[in-house]
Structures are given as C-alpha cells and as structure tokens.
Amino acid sequence: MNTSVRLQELTLKAEDDLRPHFERIDRISHENTNRVLDAFRDMRVSDAMFSAGSGYGYDDRGRDALDKIYAQVFGAEAALVRHNMVSGTHALAVALFGLLRPGDIMLSVTGAPYDTLESVIGITGKNGDGSLADFGVEYMQIGLTPSGIDLEAVEEAICALGERVKVVYVQRSKGYSERKTLRVSQIGALAELVKRLSSAYVMVDNCYGEFVEAIEPTHVGADLIVGSLIKNPGGGMAECGGYIAGSARAVELASYRLTSPGIGAEVGATLGQNKNMFRGFFYAPHTVAQALKTAHFAAYIFAALGYATSPEYDEVRSDIIQAVRLGSPERIIRFCRGIQSASPVDSHLSPVPWDMPGYSSQVIMAAGAFVQGASIELSADAPLREPYTVFFQGGLTYESGRIGILAAARALLDD
Image (cartoon, rainbow, N blue to C red; front, side, top):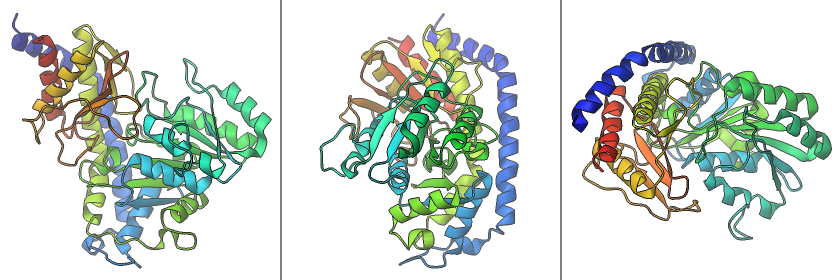
C-alpha cells in the first residue's frame, strides 16, 4: 500500500474513533466562549477601546478593560495584559522578581523548571547576570510522583522552612519532558495545602494550558497565573505580549517590576495592539479547541505508525502539547521539515538545529507562522538530545493542523 492511501485510510479511522473526544472538546469550548463573551459585555467593549495609545498611556480605556476581562474570565481579582512582555519567560520573570525578596525561597514543586527559566533563577548563567540568586533568593525543588505533585513532600518542606518559602512554583505543562501535564484540580489541591500551612504565593506557569479545561488555576486558589499571548490566550491574533493574573496584591507587585514601584499598571502605551489582543482573547477558546483536536489526531496517527506518544490519543488533556518519541535526531529533523512544508508561511524553508539562547542543547523548530514563534499556530520543536522526542502544538484550524500532521507522517514513512 502506498503512503498516501495508507494515511487516507488511517485518517478516516482516526476521526471516527476520535469523535467522542472532539465532542467533549467542543463542549468545553462553548463553556469558555460563553464566559469570555459575558466578560466582553460586562466591560461594555466598544470600538473606541481599540484606539492606539501613545506616550505614557494614561487613561487607556482599552488597556484597562482588557485587564479586567482577563481577570473576570480567569476568576482572578486583577490582571496585567501587556504587549511589551516579550515572551512567556519574560512574563514569568516579571512575576518572580515582583514577588520574591532577598532571603526568600522559591520552591518548585514540579521538579526542574523549563530550560529558559534556569538563567532567571540562577541555576545556570554567570554570577552578576542579575538572576534571582544574585539578589539572594534561594531555589529548591521537589520532584513529581507518577500521579502528580508530591503533596506530602511539599508539606514537609513548608513546615521545615516556614515563612521563608515565599513562592510555591508550579509548571502546569510538561515543557521538554515526558511527564504528564497537571490538571487544574491537582493545582487546586496544592493551593489548599499551601494556604493551610503558610502565606506563600502559589504561582503557576500556565503556558499552553489556558482554555483547555473549563476552569483555570486561579479559580481553585492559585495566587498568580502567567502566560504568553502568542500561545493559547492570544487566539492566533495577538502579535506579541504576555499576561499575569491573580490576587490584587500579587498582580500589583508584578506591575511594579514591569514598570516601577508606585506606577505599576497605571501607564503603558498600547501602540495599536489593543484590537488584536481583544480579538485574540475572544477567539481563544475556539482556537484552543482546534489545537486540541489536532493534538488528539496526531497522537492517533503516530501511535498507529509505531511511535510512543504522550499523551495517548484517548487521554483527557490539560495542555495543547503533544510529544512523540522518534528515537533519533534524523527523524526529528524530518518530522519538523514535514510540519514546515505544510505551513502557510515559509513552507519553502527547511528548519535546522541551532544554538538557541536559553537552551542547553541545540534546538530545531518548525514554525511557518503568521506571528514569529507563535505556539498556538502549528509548530514543532525539539532539543537534540536523548530520548529524541519532538514536541508540537497548535493549529489555528483543525483542517490545517491535520494537513501538517499528515505531512510529518509522510516525511517519516518516506524515509
């Protein structure tokens, strides 16, 4: 059987078997869309809010309304949504430096953080670079158990260290690892424990998780959630930016780090970015649903071709990332080139591994996206290290996502 016929038959079977999962995803999308629409109506969003602010940006109605919309939708007291947070890592750094002081302890309860945070914390990098460690903040971590957060170990650590634990840090998504993404309910159980034992902030790296479930970590007790607008909440429309949402005091402290103490969120010219950020957040629940369907489809196809996938095709998810263990750097490169070849932008280019800033291994990235580096658009990336697993996510539409997945499959089959 030739490759095309084989994949056509496999696609038909996949979509038949995935029908109940797609229906569940659509139900969550409807619920989240209703919550977003309610917030837009409550804030009385109008065309005037899309105007381009300049200078200091005092009294920017659009900026202030968008902050309140994020807060309402995410079940938070306040939010900070800004186009000049240049990445998810930048937004996380703003939040961490806002909350932590010399002598405090940052306790990660999901093991080692994502690669790009290592230099922020001071795990890697040079003394004097301006990391948290340079400012006297200590870092400790607790590994995950097979079932999730080790609550017993967390309790022991907080009881032993006391009020020095200022931030209990959670990375919701898997990053470049093959562990399971945390469910919102698991984060809620952690928040309940921490609140019972201390006054520490529970801070969640929420990247890739927004709108995958019907609630967010701030609905279940997290003090702060942080993410990137070129991932889920930007809906494929935001050109750049990040958000921080949570308790009023935690967001206020983060805003002082973004601008300066005493000024905080009161300034910041929007420079014409408001409309895309509003529109992207409105699209986001539907766009995330498209990405989830693409991920389920991909897990089905590559499992059928003999590769280990995480999550498996019939697992309920809490982020949009799909991992496929390919077993060799050559297969990773072919996979990424297959994704790139089916992209709407730069499909004629071939991605190659490179020394990407902030990463300990060479990384290859396929991202033929309208917004450079946008992970909500179909993209694939992998560190060139064992066990040679590729991570991909996104898909503005399921139809285009499916085409991309089949292109990657053909690239492997035609080897």
